[in-house]
Image (tube, rainbow, N blue to C red; front, side, top):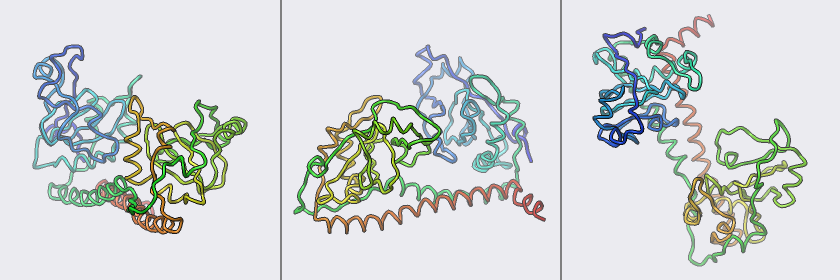
Length: 382
């Protein structure tokens, strides 16, 4: 076990920020990293460019420092525990502690970054402060990591990077898949308003939220985000459904913020929706509900939605524009065969989620082995 303050191997430098009101400090040639350059979706970020930059004068007249390439960057203020490796020399703001590897025969940055992920809970526990919790440089230097010989580090990095490639590939499938409907030129084309009985949206005000009650759905509830569920009083729900009553077989469609995501209502329980969701009721003698969901999630419909959306602080898709989205409409039998084909595709796509879970577990198992946690568990069970 070696501490990050071990000067023969590591040197820890804090970041710094030039005065923001001096224009000549900014927009220079020196990349300057902030938290935005380390997205929360990354396990380990590789920094090759930064959103902002500073000038030589800004560097010289502030506490910012140039960090050599292949250092390990750790966020240690407010948002604690995002980790990156810079692939070119950069400066960082004061929200980071930067680990410079002084002896390349003792440590590789990829290994150091990986083992530090296991210390994020410790960093958070050690952080102190009022408005922004922060771990001090001296405390950060007390952190200890297992440091096996260099060839072992390289083997561990190679193993985890192989797992991560699988995860990245699976995520790319999940992020980029949209159903495609091959449109036959003989199919009639209708506007949604022509093949639906109603297109409306949810509450135009924030209702009273309770710990339990009638579920109240927002965009995050149909996009798979991890937002907390919301509930409203039954009397407010009863008022809302006078104008907008979701029923099984209807389709929800996101129209504010994240636009163009459709979700078929295939459940029986009562709920209300927020204004960020549209409710679309298909004419079921013409339009299969599953086909409507598949079409609205397709690349064709998404292109129409984005072309009709209004961009401002939040992207909006108005009801009047949703009604003009055009949909190709073959016979119900053909609609259902298209749905069956798309559902088979979606089953394969969904398998990538399980793949991600399995390979993330493999990474954590490898890291646990490095830290000796597997041995501890075995000793405990004995």
